[in-house]
Amino acid sequence: MIQDPLELLNLHYEEQTRQGSSRFENELKASLEAECAEVDFEPVVTGLRKTLPIAAAMVFGLLTTKASQSDVKQLAAQIERNQASSIPTELETQWDDSTID
Amino acid sequence: MNDAICRDTIASQRAIAKEQSLVDEFLNRYRDSSFRIAMRILGNPDAAEDVAQEALIRAFRSWDRLSHIERQAAWVRKTVVRCALTAIERTPQHEKLPDQVPGECSGAHAVMVQAVLNSLAPDQRVLLGLALGEELSYREIAEALDVPMGTVASRIHSAKAAFRKAWEGTQ
Image (tube, rainbow over all chains, first blue to last red; front, side, top):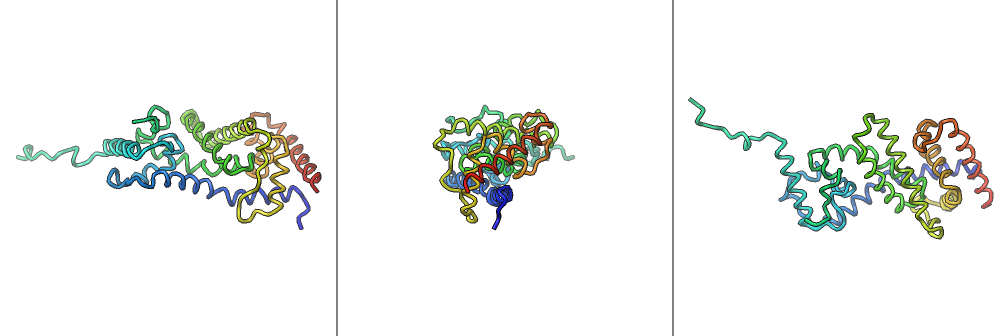
C-alpha cells in the first residue's frame, strides 16, 4: 500500500507517460484518416503519405476538417509539382539526338 | 479553392516550398512531449490534444528564429505551458474536474491524484508536471516559466507541500 502522496503522484505521471506517447499520434491519425478515407491519393501522387504525412498537414493548417476531396487532391497535385520541379529528371533534360555527330 | 487549405499561412508556404521534411521532423521531435506536458497540466486528454496542437503550430511559426535544438525545445515547452495556462483560464470552473482519467491502468488512486492536482493553483500543477513528470532541470523549468532559476526550487517545494496537504485533506 503506497502511503506517500508524492509517490502516488509520480506513479500517476508514469502512467500518463505510458498512455500519452501513442495516444496523441493515434488520435491525430485516426481523425485524419477518417477525414481522408474516401480520397484516393495514389492516382494523384505516389508517396504523398511518405513525404507529407497527413497528420502534419492537418496539424500545421494545410488541411482542416472542412477540406473536401477536391481540396486534398489539389493540394497533393501542387506538392507533386513542387517536388517534381526540384528533382532533375530525364524528361526535363531531353536527349537531343541532333547534337550527335 | 476554399479556405480549407490555408495557402497563405507560414506553415503551408514552407511545406509547399519543399520543406515537408522540416514539418515531419518537427512533428516527430515535439509531438509527444508537447502532449505529455499539456496532459500533466490539464489532466484531460481531449484538452491536452487541443493545447498541444495549438502550441505546436505557434512554435513552428517561430522555428527559424531559433537556431539551436536546445532553444527550440525550450521554446516549444514554454509555448505549451502558456497555451495550457490560457486554456485553464478559459475553462469554466464547473468543467475543470474531469469525470474520469482514461486508460486501462487507471485506478481509483489515479482519479484521486488528478482531482487533487486540479485543486491546486495552475502554476503549481505546471511546476509539478515539469519537475516530477518531465524531470526537467531547474534551468529548463525557469526557461519554460520565465522565472529566475533561484526561485524554481522554492516554488517546487511549495507545490509539493501543497499537493501533500491537499491529498491529506482527502483522506
